[in-house]
Amino acid sequence: MAALAAMGTVSTSALADGGIPRAWGILFEPGNPSHVMIRSLFWGLFDQRAGQSSWSLFCSQAFGGKALQKGDFPTVLTQGGRILVGGGFAGLTASDDGCAWRNIDAFGGDSVLGLAPVDSAGKKYVLLTVKGNGDGGVTARAYGSEDRGDTWAELAGALPKDYSFASIAVAPSDPKRMYVAGVKVNVGTRALAATADGGKTWKSYSIPAPDGFDPTVVAAILPSDPDTVFVRIGGPDDVGAPPAPDALWATTDGGQNWVRSYAASGDIAGVAFSSDSKKVLVAGPMEGIKSAALADATAGTDGAFKTLFTGQVWGLAASEDGKLYAGNDDFNPSQHFMLGVSTDQGVTFNAVMDHCNVQFPVCPGTSTMESVCREQWERQGGYVTDFLDMGACAEGGAGGAGGTAGASGAGGRAGAAGSGGAGKGGVPSVSPDAGSGATDSADDRMKINTTGCAVSAARSGSTLLATLLAGAAVFGFSRARSRRRRP
Image 1 (cartoon, helix red, strand yellow):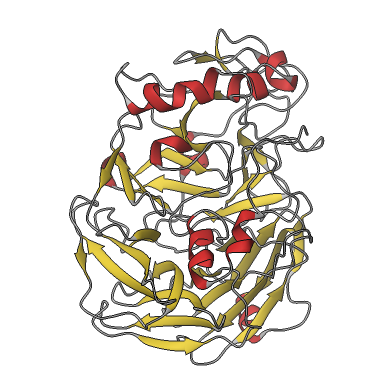
Image 2 (tube, rainbow, N blue to C red):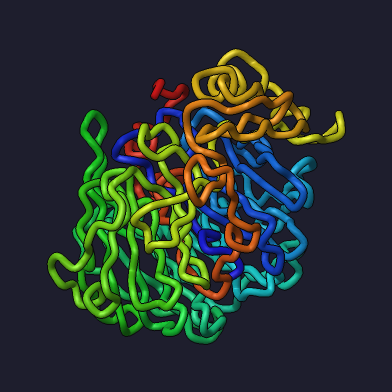
């Protein structure tokens, strides 16, 4: 697929973010591995393009969200670097440069809940909408685009009635094989709907997980086999109660039969395959990173998943050359990074970026960024005062708009964009050997498998909207948080 975490939204952590930026989704531009984007549950999108030493922050207000309210939305990077974001009630929003954002009004006001690439070329995409009928039911529709999202046409076949579907995905090995996952409105039955003819006809299969209105999303499709699908089932999260653990379910026959592959301790935030597709990896803030042989994972073998990394982990992406990219707790005292890369199958990581190495994008004064995001950057409680002027970021160099990142000190964290300065006490932004001053090459950092279809599991943002439509509105309102906790 064109991006390893391109479809769906992210899971709300059992250990709540509290407004801290996390790499929940990791996306790469098709044909341009130097353009990488991180999708965070709070704040928005963090973007780095060729020639940039820092990461630009595109705040959530640009595409219908709020920087300090949980709500990550399905996002893809197309050929040429266009960003498409499914913003729930806000519809589909697009930007070609990150500065100017526009709404693509092609869905009659329906909420956009799913978005996914069809192939690795970066031109064809599918999209999922859901709309309440006013009689207690909902109507879901699937659309396709062949021009990077400029125009959309509804797929010929009707999706099953009265299912609040929360995600859509396409099999990497067969673009006509698509899946959507969700729950039966007012009933809570979990289901996977599948098409083998590009959306002309759909067939629904029940998933034998406990009924509930918490998100049910397609987590990953095996790159070499369109019949092998993993679905994440959200645990019941009641108001005033701790979030319940998630579970990963697997089918090897396109949805006809299922096994529970993995029962998590908390939320499952990321699911990916190893580069050779022989292993399944799961991640979460209470899981770290765990791995199981594909055969054991699809058989539901007890104890199949073994711990690789014990930190708090979010998004995952496996590279073609055996490296593993992950979103990590950047405030972990032992391993500082927001996005890291591993060359030993997830046992240790080298930092690719941290939350200090961020700048406000250089955009025209009339741009969306300046009109709606400048405030989120500069105000009291904005990104500068909450992060760049505090702790390790303040030690490394103050943040700026369109400046140059400060150099890493020996064994230290890189200074944020702006005037820079020597970093102190941390790790370099990218370092294969902490404190050595060496860096991985761009190819090492950005060489991602664009033929796989591992996707970060979803819970908040647009999947929250699907949950509301399914009849569990109380779930979503318990999620909102306006401020972050201090790490």
